[in-house]
Image (cartoon, rainbow, N blue to C red; front, top):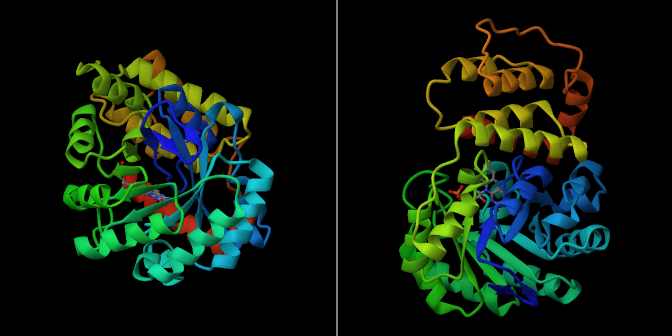
Length: 361
Ligand SMILES: Cc1cc2nc3c(=O)[nH]c(=O)nc-3n(C[C@H](O)[C@H](O)[C@H](O)COP(=O)(O)O)c2cc1C
């Protein structure tokens, strides 16, 4: 698949996920065959206000290229300036516009899905971005209730100069439940000429193959299924090439992937309690007979206790009691947590992370 001047080695893409697709997870997905990975959404407002935490989300490692940075916003000038700032610092291979986030806080401020109601703004934003950036610009949208209106928005995005479009086949109202509408994705693909990437509920290789062949799209984007199982990219790619299903990762292999994730977090100084707990739970997902490990993880209070539980899981020596007393390294002390909440965009992120945590567990 080609996106503008960018030539990808395949057509499998890791979805942007707020509070989830940090650099270490992206590197693992890349290792297992994702052809393109996206950062979580970054608030354009926060970037132009020089919010360091938000700017830091754009951190890219050379081994993960090509990588896209996704921006969230609604104001063309702010989006252009923030994209230029991030392009100058990180040189991303792609800048993506979020037209699909359904979170109330985001939609209320005119961003995410709200952009789909205003083609004029989408056109202006994409024209500004394509005019100002060296990197190709892509967009990620959800579908609307009507096929015609959705196709109209997709055509606007193409005409404005976007180099590819990802479509999550659900409406804003659906959130993350209900069926993904393959018909609308197919209609978009046949109406525009830029590459279209289909997204929504790709949980295994058979679903992936069906989605690709039914919609005739150029690429596939996977999100939640890759969180605790980045190897899914290898399985899907192998199936698409050979029609042969590879065995699932064993418990040990999944744990090894988790420990590699931790190593990468340490390397990039990104080890954080909330993230690690979420990821540990996801790397154990779909495993049987490990109820006691899950219960102990629920009660974990710091990074050290998570590591101890996962190491015991690997060694097969589970302790039955749950220690809830914090050890020396508690990673979210109260004072920084309170100042964190004072920043409006960080608050949105916190809400998103909260949503992510409750959703994913
Ligand atoms: C926790 C979480 C965070 C997400 N954050 C973003 C985001 O930052 N930007 C975005 O465009 N989509 C975001 N999404 C939507 C995903 O990119 C994707 O469209 C959706 O999860 C459907 O794909 P899946 O079924 O493969 O997960 C998020 C989804 C989840 C579950």
